[in-house]
Length: 163
Image 1 (cartoon, rainbow, N blue to C red):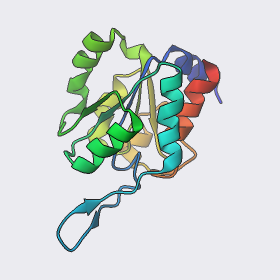
Image 2 (tube, rainbow, N blue to C red):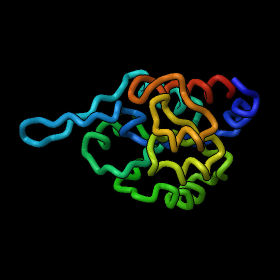
Image 3 (tube, rainbow, N blue to C red):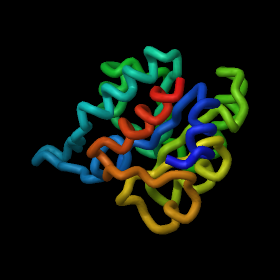
Image 4 (spheres, rainbow, N blue to C red):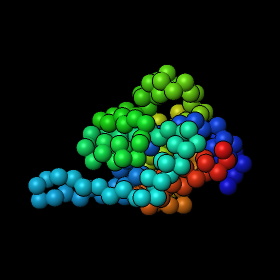
């Protein structure tokens, strides 16, 4: 791994993540009653735990507002869920104030065009291997893993291993 990425990892105090296309494979499974079901990868959940053990909170930033995400976040002891966020970069002022961090101390992993502006404004930007091309052009690091298959864990391991 490049030294500049490792140096960026050393500064991280908080991790932001998208849900669909990062923590899940991006698929939405519908029941016959119209309920949406999502599959989360257990190793990504362990990544949240490993970060928390290093006092690095994880915050979810998603345009979705679903009970499934809130329940998963509760189970994983996610610090905060920002749901229903269309312009994700606008939550940064709240993050700076509440957690007393600067942009260089924030990592974000996202996968699609609605993540680009936030990815541009953080100290460490990452994306799953199967993200869209517009995102690949903007991030510091493209994970070796796909969405919903350990990309978040890859990010967590990178940070934990340098702390």
